[in-house]
Image 1 (cartoon, one colour):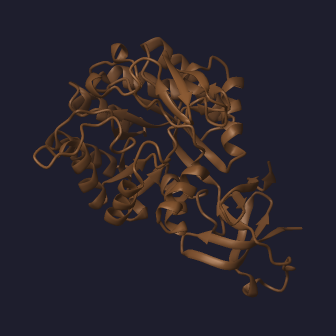
Image 2 (cartoon, rainbow, N blue to C red; image 1 turned 120 degrees about the horizontal axis):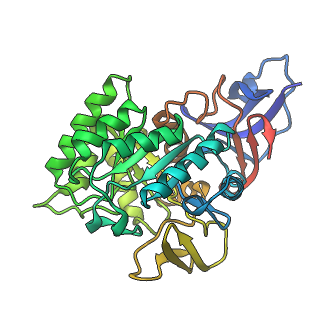
Image 3 (cartoon, helix red, strand yellow; image 1 turned 90 degrees about the horizontal axis):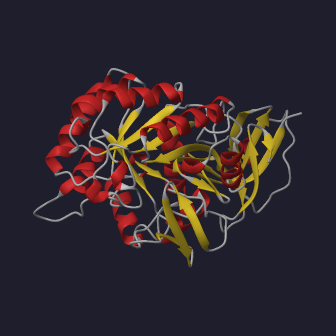
Length: 390
């Protein structure tokens, strides 16, 4: 017998105040208003539930006390995956940070095992071809000039699961060597941790978009726009303005860590007003402390102190990733004034599109049965993953 869920639905086409989702096995087979449910199925009683698609996080370093960059076996990252799944992130990209070459290759291979097992949907490398001047919470000593052989080696270790790599366009060798190597491997270049001029970013986006065009309608991304970038200035627009312009042209998707710490609410609202939800991917940049109490944690080689729910480097005080789940980000964005359907579109449908996945990211017939049931305040109550309750 199919499973029939009823409540307020958040779909790519908008809100259905009283709707139903019919699940048969691992697949959604029908979505629509409750009064339109085919008579072959029995409509359950009304509920106060809100039904969202399973959320998709493109940028996550860990959670539940576990860190992807510091894991040496697949058991540790499963703890992080479970932490985020229980809060509605049913598809997660595991992110690494800049590290020595052998560490990157080993961690990537380990995460590829996790991807083969279906625990994660891909791997993101945040480095090592980044600007030491915009290192943020990463170790500048491990950052390298562009190296196509290393990019290809990482992609090989990922065994087809490398989905994005953050690169700084001004770093020598990145545009000419690394961009083609990434696209050849099926990965998407992501502009971030950069001190580049607007012109340098525009050239990298042009090059990357042309390379990606050969693989279909795919866009570059910008790693946590504003954070880890030269600030926007009216006489020196830098990477922020160039990424916004590229996103407005349909060439790039911007990540926003809209957790109330990384960005002001007014900044988030402005980007939604400028670009619309279809060019924004909400992400967490979550690290090991997500779902955990304040204390001391690791992010790669860097010691991080979480105090008052904000993660900062023990030395220097730079913000060191996030401690929110993606549903918390959605809740914060909605509280800031973004319509619920837009926030969910940017937290599920757009990131699924970045991944090239048409089977996840929306409450729609034919998609995988990933459903997050929340209360009216968007607090998660139950999570369905592939038709199975977690």
